[in-house]
Length: 282
Ligand SMILES: NC(=O)c1ccc[n+]([C@@H]2O[C@H](COP(=O)([O-])OP(=O)(O)OC[C@H]3O[C@@H](n4cnc5c(N)ncnc54)[C@H](OP(=O)(O)O)[C@@H]3O)[C@@H](O)[C@H]2O)c1
Image 1 (spheres, helix red, strand yellow):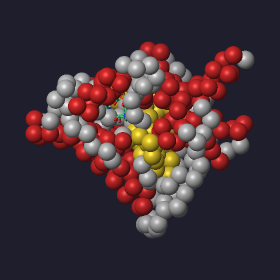
Image 2 (image 1 turned 60 degrees about the vertical axis):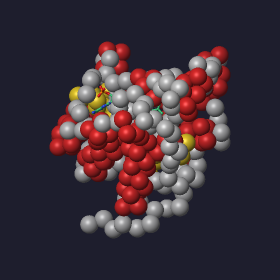
Image 3 (image 1 turned 120 degrees about the vertical axis):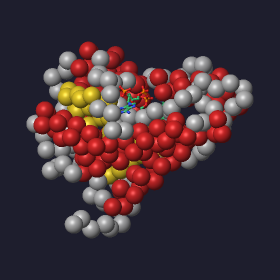
C-alpha cells in the first residue's frame, strides 16, 4: 500500500529538467482526453509534431488530419460512463503497446448550457457538468493510476472560474472548483506524481463560444463578450497548446497540486509564439 506523505514544496516539470536537446521528447507517452476538438485536438497535434506517442479519447473521434497520424491512437469513449473509462484506457495502452502514460492531460470538459442565473439552471444540467469536469477527471486518473506504469505528471484543463466566480457560471465554476480540490487531493496522496490544474482562459473553441453567450442581465460575462472581440484577447487553440507546452518546458518551482493561471506562468518564460515566429523566419 502506497503511503501518503506531504508533497514536495516545489516541482519543476519533467521537460524543464531535461537538457534543451531532449526537452521536446521529455513528456514521453501522452494521454489527452477531449481530443476531438479545441485545445485537446491542438495539443495532440503539437505533441505529435514533437514526436510523442499520443493516445486520446472523446465521444467523437478526431478529424481525418489527426486520425491518420501513425503515432496517434484514439478511442471513442464517454468519460461520464465511468465504468467504461478504465477499459477504454487499457485498450488504448494495448493498441499503443505501452504500459501506461508518462504525461496525462485531463482536458475534456463542458460548460453545459449557455450562461444563466443560478436558480434557472436545471439540477440535471448542473450535475451533468460536474459529472464530466470532476467525475470524468477522477475516472481518468483512477484508470491511469491502476496501469502497470504510473504517470509522472498530470495536467488538468482548469479555469480561473473555479477560484473567482461570476454570475451566470454556476455549473462550470462549481465543477472547476471541485477539479482544483480533486487535483490537490490526488497530489497529497500521490507525491511521486506532479499534478497541475492549469487555468487556460479565453481560447476560441466551441466551449469558449458558449461561455460568452450572455446578455446584459449577466454584466460581467456580457463585458467579457465585448472584450472577446478585441484583437489578441482570445487566443486560438494552437496558440494555447503552444503555451501549455512552453510552460511544461520552462516553468520552474511550481507548487505541486496548486492551481496556476497560464497567463501568469507565461510572464516568466520565453514567449513560445515569438520563438515560433523566429524559427519560421529562419
Ligand atoms: N476555451 C476556453 O476558453 C477554456 C478556458 C479555460 C479552460 N478550458 C478547459 O479546456 C478544456 C477543453 O475545452 P475546449 O475549450 O477545448 O472545448 P471544446 O473544443 O468544446 O472541447 C471539449 C472536448 O471535451 C470532449 N468531451 C465533451 N464531453 C465529453 C464526454 N462526455 N466524454 C469524453 N469527452 C468529452 C469533447 O469531445 P466530444 O464532444 O467528442 O466528446 C471535446 O473533445 C475544458 O476542460 C475546458 O473547461 C477552456
